[in-house]
Amino acid sequence: MKLIKTLAAAIFAMGIFGGSALAGSHGGKKDIVDTAVEAGSFTTLVAAVQAADLVETLKGEGPFTVFAPTDEAFAALGMTVQDLLKPENKDKLTAVLTYHVIGGTVMAADLVDDSTPATVQGSTVTIDLDNGPMVNDANVVTADVAASNGVIHVIDKVLVPEGVL
Image (tube, rainbow, N blue to C red):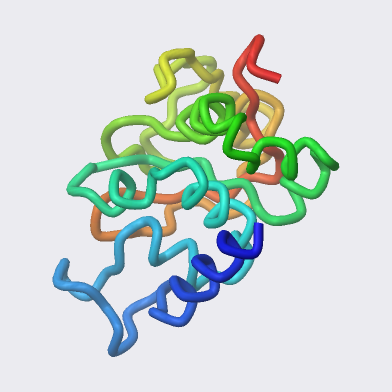
């Protein structure tokens, strides 16, 4: 766990969110991982991405749409997060994280009510615009955070695919 926190801190030190002097080579925007790190409210998500060896994937060309749970959303899972970060649970952690990712760039205006887009994990999520926007039972609290390789929509709950936990 100490290693994960150290790696997350190192990534944080590299900078992120917004178009500062640390911006990457993609028109001034940073990739999804760097954007999440700079935001400061995704330390658990970043640590989980590190533990699942998904950093290079999410720094890749994409494009990706990521429904990113905040630290508070992960805290609501309780001890489940600590269990997921253990090496023996890497497959479960990977399933949970990839359940938050859709291929392509889907901006809030492109979301379709009652649609069920497939996630990278292989299951689908349900989009609800009547009560939201929502993804399954998570509220989208901030939409359309642009990154060089996709977009992040901040959500207030961790999405868990059926049968994983």
